[in-house]
Length: 472
Image 1 (cartoon, rainbow, N blue to C red):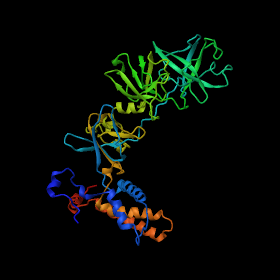
Image 2: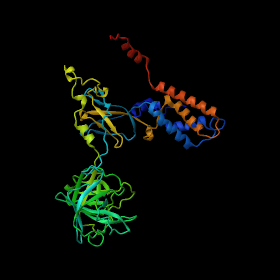
Image 3: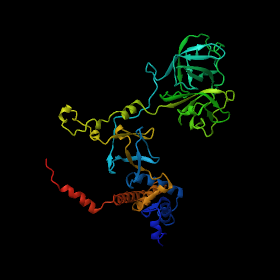
Image 4: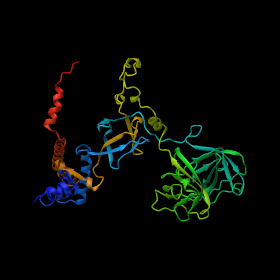
């Protein structure tokens, strides 16, 4: 029976060209069941799910060093000098930029820089957020801080001498920031009590009512995250004035549409009626409506307190810094490989600076490093605006269309699956497992040789250049 089910004319008129050299993973599983599983065969009984599992593991492992790595992406490097890693990225094989003639110029990785996480520090260098606060006694108590502290978010714990004194009730855990206000470069806050096991931000504390000191003296307050994690530096903070919160909804409406210009997707939202883990999901610049979402929850019920809904409120939006000082200095500085091209008579006047030159910097193509935490490639400043190609390795399991195997490696797949199944079964003689282990090794080696695609004419042409005399 013929394997081809289309005519030559249909093939050339279609779009699936060259696919005959591959076999799908589903076909390999089916053919393995026929050839290896059954009575009087090496594997008498096995579940199809077991075969599928080991087949996928075989594709993953063989994709790294046996199959051809032909996946690549091309982008124009933006001003941010960053490239997002592909969804199915495992490792790169080559990063290069392309000139006007279409020729690749290899970029080299640099290990001398990184993009570390910037941690917020106070003036003493401690990893904490502190501020001087003055208690204002009254029916609507406010603590006025000694400056503008845009890093303070609603829901943060607050500690201080007056807040943790002898008048502190036993049934309260600590105090939380219930609201923030920023005016003329000064931040003011109100606080609420946090009940053990619950969080209540809707009832502010009345200073002078027997819980807090009636003194208006200034004292140092310390602010911490609820999960006690370190406070990270903010990248941008924007305070939206006169915002309208919609009841039983996840929408915030600005007084004017232009007010949402500085609000970006992913920003944290700080407000008394909005949970502390809420972020911006979408910004409609035409209508001035901001959509919120809680990434850690299936549903979104951000605005729960109806008492303040509908009134014009102040909402703070914060974005945690993604770019450290180290990365900012790297992308703004002139790369060392471009500071001198060494193509003139300045070899010796460089005062010996070429001595011990690091080979990774002995080129003018540029450099890069990969930030695994953010999933981005960072380029040096001389790559801005250039076309960059990323050749990378995938595990071959990204989509159903990618789960294919070259026919040169088909036998290696069968031997891999057979050895994996036999080695995990009880009662299989060790000599049988050892036999299939050797057969698997031999099949993989054969597949590597076949897929290496060596041609005798190309090899001979390369070796012709090796016959030249090299003078010492």
